Amino acid sequence: MFDFTPDTDLPEAERYRQLADAAFALTDGEDDPVANMANLAALMAEFLPRLNWAGFYRVIGDELVLGPFIGRPACIRIPMGQGVCGTAAASGETQLVADVHAFPGHIACDATSASELVVPVTRDGKVIAVIDLDSPNKNRFGQEDAAGIEKLASAIADRI
Image 1: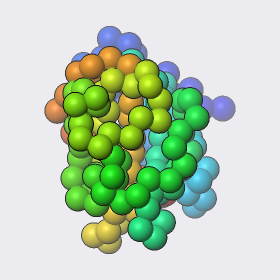
Image 2 (image 1 turned 90 degrees about the vertical axis):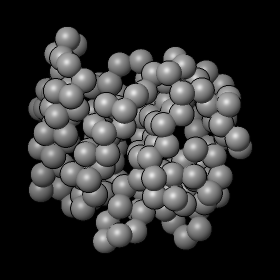
Image 3 (image 1 turned 45 degrees about the vertical axis):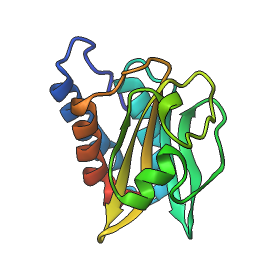
Image 4 (image 1 turned 90 degrees about the horizontal axis):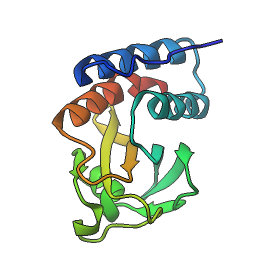
């Protein structure tokens, strides 16, 4: 049994360090990417407050396809370059969106989402997936969140 329950009073940088450590421990020795993404989605949902969706979209051909997640049902396919997730995947750059309703071309899978953080996961210089975090709160995500999830993406890239 795994118990990675974080201390709720941790500074953000420490919370993300512990999240990355837990993710690395949880996926150690497991080579099934779907199993690892499922556990990582659950881990992010447990570690990160004020989320309504946490999970993955995988790059398959010229689109993103829904991967394991925690949250309400979501869009299954997203064309590369469209929406926040498609923009992150096409550009290879983190998308930190304070208000999704102000993002041109935002794809609303869950009407309660107000802000979003999407981080590309790269392996061998290619984007293979994105980590997608949604919150019902505007301005939920900041630079510390982006840096923390970028480190997580780097740490688990060869395990998903």
